[in-house]
Image 1 (cartoon, rainbow, N blue to C red):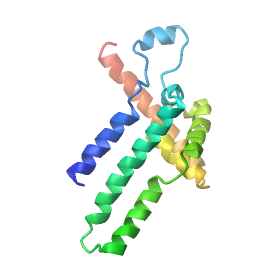
Image 2: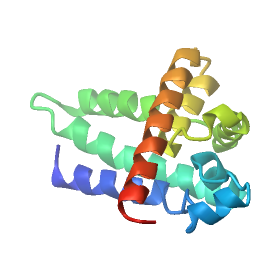
Image 3: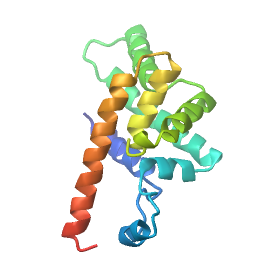
Image 4: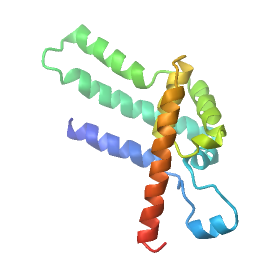
Length: 161
């Protein structure tokens, strides 16, 4: 993978997590009964404009990544490059933003999906909009999210927060 793709992947992660998913004082919010420490909370705190910007950022990163992947193949020539790019881009982007935002809103409306990271929720929503079956993927994403939550809690305890 090229340096450019790695830098863009890192940037994508930074953009995806630009809003704090966890409150600054988790003990205080837990004591108050406020359970907002989740990716669902982060997503729902975005305005419609911010949600569209998130999707635009993802599409831009995908376009750059797919351009690199398509043009770096040894035997790639004009039409092959274009076809490879189109296949790559369409597998990660290329949908109506309103449909994707609605699908992500619906996914995060279920509290069991609150800890699914934004990139996972995006991919699941993209698949759902395309008509793919996502039930098994959602179950896996929930397990991953819960594991991530436990890991974050352990890190906080180690850090004395």
